[in-house]
Length: 218
Image (cartoon, rainbow, N blue to C red; front, side, top):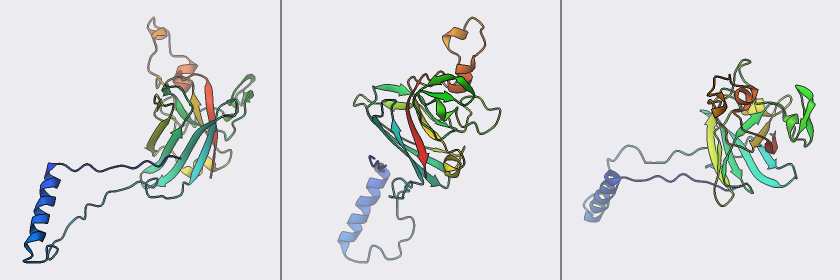
């Protein structure tokens, strides 16, 4: 897992303050720290920056069993931080979601329609949260994954739609990478003639086939 860090950028005002402090220290007439109070300037860090152990992880693989990277989950005051580190994918955008079953079986059946088979269908649909929620309002909907020209992607996002305990309990959950970019259920060209959005748009944002999957384990 690549360790990312967030670097503070000091503006002109900070530079002037530092120069003034150095000048005061050089005078030697009084202790520059005497009587000084206030913020130390310590930068806030996320759990993933502070070497805190992940509360849950998912190892991603494609249908051929090749390694695609890892996703880690951290508990924070603001919600669940999802840290993604992906490799071995072509450059471009990919749909990224959390699915309702902790199963990543190839050539499997979808729980809702046993007649339908395909890779990673055993993971079921997106974690819905609200029973009547459509995409992109599912609890398991995440920002699209951007893979760079070096075939890797790194992303960190905090969501308050679910807790880590919901991802590892009962039937578990899975991280899913889809073959296409997620349009978040915005209206595609095929609806310009007045056709209503179909199930593919309302349930997955037309994100395409399931090409990467990882069971979330605590």
